[in-house]
Length: 227
Image 1 (cartoon, rainbow, N blue to C red):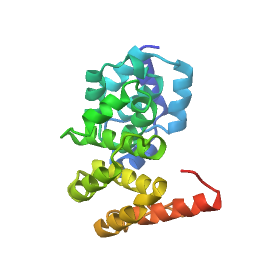
Image 2: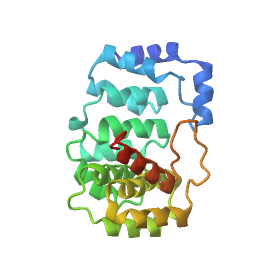
Image 3: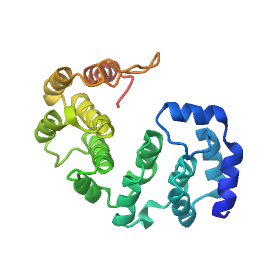
């Protein structure tokens, strides 16, 4: 399938309702407005196609970029290419899919994590803190948790909103998975107050770190969750 054929397929599946929904959540107008299920179905049809994925990403179109994250081959990206991709998108739905399907599976993600944690670009910092949050939860060996807490305390209140989100995730993961630092994580969350009044749907857990930490710890104790 060529780039134009793929874009034509995406355009046919878009709806006004989804375009409006996306705009309400921060999307720009370069979009067709597809449901994620339709994008997944098209990705399944195309299968892996690295060259097409890069062409789709370069359109800047939201739906094309979401599709690109599903058909790209992360191991074929150079460090420079991945850096450029990360810097080029701010819409959270795309950046979250980029993390889940590309960054997390990138063979040199630890090298990139260290580089991004020292970056002054907000989207690189966001990716760096996302990878750090994952390491805190699953592979904390070698991480200086106290230093991370100090950095969160110093930088998170004034951080770019995109960076705040993943820093907050790192803070919560420290409190959830490292009991020896839980009191400090809870105190930091309370003191900063970030996301204290964040609206959440019924049945969802607040991103406010103290609520998030306490709820996950409660679930762990009850044997209902290990996340």
